[in-house]
Image (cartoon, rainbow, N blue to C red):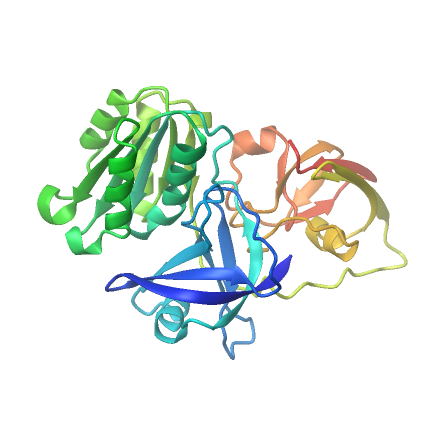
Length: 338
């Protein structure tokens, strides 16, 4: 699930945001869905390693190389290293694209909310929907001021090309003040029934999500991308521990149309078991914080050691996190293809 990517170009989008244009070192094609992210390994002498997740702002539907954008943050270990040291030719170790912040149907009408560098996955969705879909797209983009607007020229170009299907609303704090629930509610009321995607600073996302909820937008129409700093090294794959006295369950797993039956020794997490068996199950953080490893439990029971992203509705629908799931019953069945 890991690969090496070569930086072919570094683009300075704003004073504190750099885009890295990437290509696989082995010459392969990077496969991903709009809105997904890459996990980058950051050089460090920290025992626990260092890794960060950065969304792809490129579109898989267009003839363009993969691109992630990194915004420098105060005391940000990874963002400062990227902005200060990464140049064309740098080789980066990455975990393949993952994430569930991606539309199911590109022909839907979309209402997109982005704050600051939260524009990165939103831009990928926007470009893909305009190129491959048939619906209308409205983007609400909040920033401090005009100079902090990432992808300003690209958005202007897209607005000209898709003038009948794309509407971009810029909220600048220097001009309009901070986004308010009332203003969000006005935009939502003007675009009913749309699939809504939200990414940005935590207060911004909470404001938009709560306003959508109060407006009666169905939960299945609201998609929020949340990133947290990783505390461990997801590039280190733990060994599956075999205890002769422990019970071994059996899990039947379906991934990309293929079904496998795998022994699941007691006490081991599902993701580790699948990777040890040669099954390329998706993952990113390994900490129960990103949902990249989410799958559906069809049969049997599991315990989740940690969960920051699945709510009660997700759990009721059978969603589990493979990186945190240990078997509670002898026979289990999961699918990634639901």
